[in-house]
Image (cartoon, rainbow, N blue to C red; front, side, top):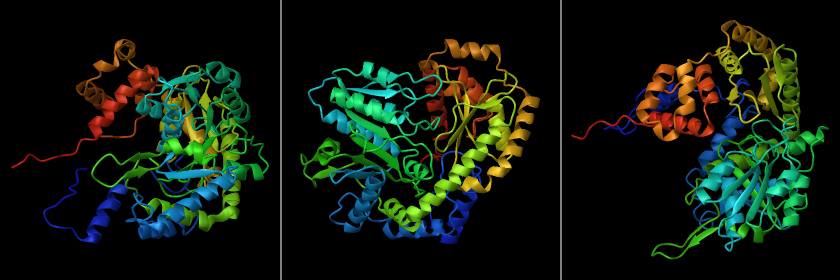
Length: 484
């Protein structure tokens, strides 16, 4: 659908809202407990209206200069303080509100790198299950990455292997609480001890589920120590637009002290304009998301988050039991947080076909490609909204499995498989990718189905990346009429 953003004459407000509503009709459902990725729905009545109003109140406030807009400074400090109290902070803890988890991780890496200007080739040590945002940070900041294998059964990071990977050039060790792909909490205490012994910073990526872990612990789950209260942990990140259920995009990066945060800042007075001073990557920042996050935390409160965690936990247990009850499926790891991750050891049951069958029945999951010895999986991020739909998932899963078996696994043409083994990323031209997208039925930007995922699954990671880069490049092309 081609739309025009800049007409000759202005369009009435009602017509514009109707257009946007029509566009949204093609999106996956953000509410209703049937989308297991991308969005976090608490199913709390009135919360959307509250956050929309709060966002509107501060939408035009600019975070470029907090002295000009003290309301933004006050709400940011309140969010940082709430995160610090929840995540083991002390009187010296400081923090920054960012636009998302990726920005938080980039800034954690930047602070660690810039704290050691004497190291010419700084290095970052992470488990192989760490979020790809660390790789993005390393790419942007020119930091080398040492990726450490995890336990093949538990998928937890190995403190022993992390210790072996630390060198004199290591500026940061990082781990997950929990990892996004599988919902596994790394042994933070042991890893932080390794980092402290080496005199290296230790960052805990709790962006994904860190806001709900304290509440799950209060419900009796054996959540291990993972936050700033752990000796050796120097920083931690948590996304408020995930399990704090705030609108996107708000994350918090906490440092154990102001001295640890200081290298995160960027300042420049070496030009004729105002002195640029930024705690994060962006200069201009809307106060809208921050006000919406503040409203969310104030409205839900501690008791609200405890109730939401309890509902989420019940949904996790129901979905996990549904997986266990189906022959041919198994849980990749026992759920210990808010993720249900399933796979199949049955050659006749293709998880990519299963994901497609679930989507056809209104259940939208996130297929994950094989990595090393980790097989292809289906990832379910479970939120409080799923509590209302969890009982319906088991029969839908059984039905989808039957449909997936009847269809059979994806069989790729031999010549296509051979192409993935010989083709180099540089050879993936836009024209070649456009032809492949056309043949695979996703040329118009549809959700990649089982065949596309099967193809990506047999391709090496670098080839996967380049294919998706070129594919996204095809989608991000506006219709621009020729000049008169």
